Image 1 (cartoon, rainbow, N blue to C red):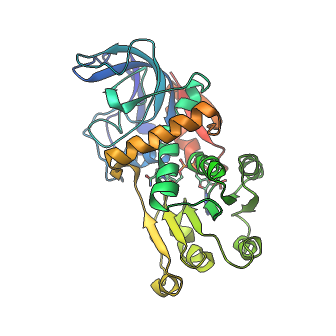
Image 2: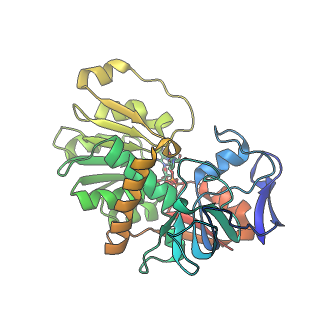
Length: 325
Ligand code: NAP
């Protein structure tokens, strides 16, 4: 089969489109024919060798995919050939690599049913983005109906997922983006208020929007830029969920003390198995009833993984970038 291989850590040019042997399902494992692959920022960090996950070389990057079951190993009773599934990187072996290929082998419990009303490209947009949004908003920040949430970086894959999950809970949401079409997308996906994070002073509007209280919850996609300001605008007893950060930031802890703020940082691979099962049960219900509807911004052939890695790091996010084998 064809797959993207990395023989050395480095910039996007290290992604090579090659022939590799087809995977064979061992006991407890499943192989799927991949129809779509989700591209996540984390795969660029792993590719560059700057992430805590540092696979042995050479390796095939990628976590999220969707397709149909081709074969099952001994002892697998949860899946059968032909089933539509999506892959969800979970705790445990081989969950965060091997995604960028025509076939994908995983432990059986790393494949979840893909409802008939959800396309394969959308299926490839679920594992990391929706898993992260649900984990951060519901499990880490304990969102409750009636609260106000700011998604700081709402136009991307995690941000749009968070907006959709929040709509189901009845939160009032404020979403930021940095391009005209990103702002439109954020409004379309349930944000009551949209703010452009490229404009100086854009967070001044948050006080007016929230009647002077500030958001109860802030989901932060770029903490190294925004954390200090998030602490300044958050409501008393507010929770700031740190999802993304690309560097260091200076903060004044006194700001957090004065308002009893909780600053909760999370990384999806740390999610305990029981919590992960709860996440995917909830996501499955939302996908089936249509309240969760992943946004696909761009589809590229698998052979163009280099361009996909450039694109996922460019400003002007619009939902999810997907590779198609
Ligand atoms: P994405 O689709 O590329 O979206 C990136 C988002 O960040 C866009 O909405 C972008 O907005 C926004 N952004 C850019 N500049 C910003 C600023 N100054 N302030 C606030 N937001 C800004 O990426 P993603 O998949 O949604 O992931 C978002 C971040 O979370 C990434 O850093 C990723 O590595 C991280 N992440 C972490 C976990 C975890 O387990 N902790 C899991 C998944 C993702 P514009 O492009 O419109 O400017």
